[in-house]
Amino acid sequence: MKRLVKLFMGVVVLLLAGCAAKSVQRNVVLDSSSGKGLVVISVSHDRVGSRGMVGTFYMDRKNGLSDMTMLRTLGEAFPGVVKGSQFKDSYGQVLVLELAAGKHSMDSWRAARQAGYEITPSVDPSPLEFEVVAGSIQYLGNLHLNMESGKNAVGLTVIADAYPEVRDMRARDIALVEKIYPQFKDSISINLLPLGPWSAERGNTRFISPLFYPVTK
Image (tube, rainbow, N blue to C red):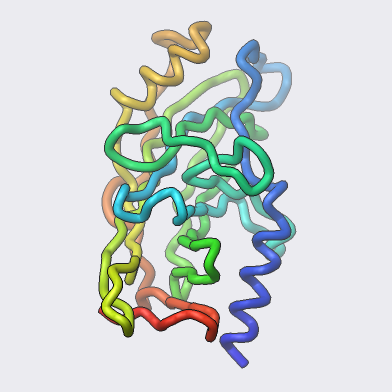
């Protein structure tokens, strides 16, 4: 029964792909009277995961899957076709998001392949909270999924597990942002999420459709 629930939840997430976060337009300007501010955050996963693996970080999840924002390590060029990576050492992208002033949080994560295999925390980790100030732009850091490889039942190398962490990649990320948004050069403040592993108390859950071979470490 639990596996059926996990499969259903995975399908629902795919159907909600339109909720994936996208960066603001290039001509955006800061306006304190708008009641909104900008945050810069990058999301990525190890290259061992390949472009077939997509990591998702969930932000401001309040009332289930329908009320949240999803930050994907690879965006879509077209429906079902992922974009290339902005980074040389990992698959990922930098996002510049416009958010309402006030408190926000990163709440959970997921790593999944199109073949039906996914890795999620068994219990959501403690949320990573941050505050947005109207008319400001701030850098929060890099949410990265470290991938652990393993062998499946037929001896093929596959992704066996994933471990998220928060990294300070300001030199790389801010340089990319300032290239796309030159109006923010030298004006991005630093307000990092807590650095280091973002661990859940009970480890991770790995689910795979019965049509595919199970993964073993």
